[in-house]
Length: 248
Image (tube, rainbow, N blue to C red; front, top):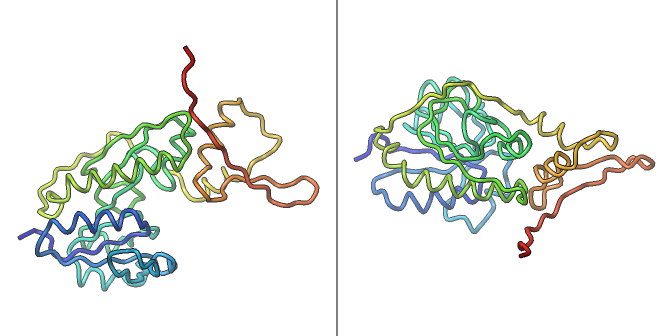
């Protein structure tokens, strides 16, 4: 049997829930429940998911969590884990960034902008944001022609690969951790929101302007915008990049 048997998965990400469900089939004797944020009604109502999701609001529901589960895994959960819960039950985070760089909100966006590594990290959760001891991590590449969603898609696949490799050690509590030598940096939601509003009078090199727009281009999401100087309307901006063939 495993050291941890009663497991709670908290996720707001369709791809990672599907991926974990596939991995969990390999392990007999596990009790796994799946929760998502209470506000994420679209994910809960998604009938193509292989499991039933239950709404949870950790700020108020954490006492029930520690009473029922001995391991909690966050797969892109959009809620902060209360300090009381982190102290009482083993909590592990699967994070779409290469810790300790660009901890916090949308790591790949800020890696495009500041040139710090892209990657995925599995780490223990402590009372600080994306800060706990590292269990495993993997770098991914980010190319000049890739936007935020291109890099993000590579990262979530790397996260599943890490889970596949390290889930046995996590379940048996036999993994080893490392502590980063530096604290790194943290980006909050307000930092991302500040990037989204474009100043038409801001002076940037062409390279930095392209980086800003590709960092803010994420599929159908409307991130980058500026205000029409006459009407005050928001004008949304995204970037389409296509890699050409080398000419001989």
